[in-house]
Image 1 (cartoon, helix red, strand yellow):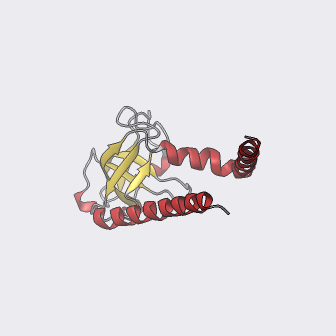
Image 2 (tube, rainbow, N blue to C red):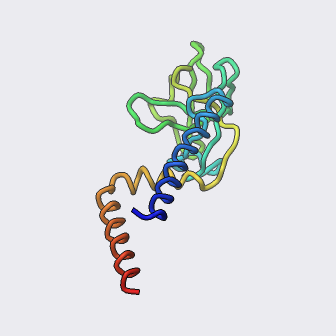
Image 3 (cartoon, helix red, strand yellow):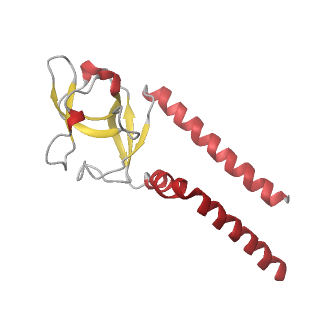
Length: 163
């Protein structure tokens, strides 16, 4: 293996480690297990759009109020939900709704504090598309991606030899 290939591998591994450490550092500073969340639907348009990244801060349930945008997990879904609090129930649970949705979804009527990851404090436009492309296109088609990369790499090496 050439020094260029080794350098590339080190660069990629270093990037992955740096991203992990940055995420963990943000989690610690912002007091949440999920400091950055990619928006995966347009249910909150025009507040933000699919592909935006939200920065979250951990917030005590008693400090949440109607109008706050929260990120919470739903047991039946793999992806967390990002919606606005529209009501606080008598028992202290929350009700939410997406700004662009015509009504509430069934799981939005009784959100417990344990389900909440945090409250939105900042929006980074478009950067979430990196995650969406990975999870929706690259990972589900990983065999095709690996095959294309191998063919591309071998083709590049062949062309380099010919020249």
